[in-house]
Length: 305
Ligand code: GRG
Image 1 (cartoon, rainbow, N blue to C red):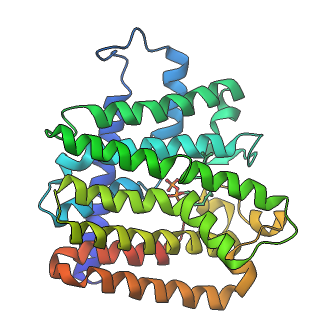
Image 2 (cartoon, rainbow, N blue to C red):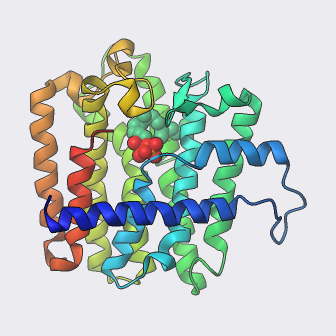
């Protein structure tokens, strides 16, 4: 393994540990400022939904994007954790019977299976709102304008014109006889890509990057968001439930339109490689400072789960 790959793996692990510690702390029993009480069952369901699992890719991207602009992991971890909570909420709601109706997530029973539907809905709601509480806190960033910018970024990427909107398009697509490439790209850019792009741009915001550099991080995030979903669609076919910790072969079962179903496996694998090359080109102006992010892009595409 190359020295760089090893460093990437070490950082992926150490960032994930820092995120885990932070999430545990954010979900402790003690109420904060305006809270009245933290109901035990809801807190437990939120812990079940977010602790001890997942690759923590989104917070990793926040921390490593911020690192390019001289921000330490400890200074970016709260923003990363807020994004991870939004991601976890989306998984909990996506697994509900009204949506994907899944029993397994991150190798564990889904939240509605471990608790019940009502509790899972509330756990998702509370994770989402907690994310915005975190963003508003001074510990997240000392400058209030930066915090507002983060709030706007997270809200717009996770809501109507981002992830939630993408999920709506995805549900609608299931009822249509066919879906074309542009429709697939749009819904995937929203459903999955938006949070990944958000992670990369958040790093630039935390680091007070120039307009041009922020645009570069936006572009990098857009490309790897697309690559991430492509990899997910490929893994849906080539991997198994044990490796993924979630049900596979779902897209084909549902007759779901994906780029893989449209172009085939080989062409999709080639497209993923092209996207990696594009992502690397975008990072070129940052030189060695972006070496870990280049590895992150590689990992996004070559990951096994
Ligand atoms: C319900 C509002 C709402 C949105 C749902 C996230 C999502 C949108 C749907 C999940 C369905 C899905 C499998 C999408 C493919 C990409 C994806 C988000 C995979 C899971 O992300 P990973 O691989 O998961 O980063 P871990 O568990 O590693 O965090």
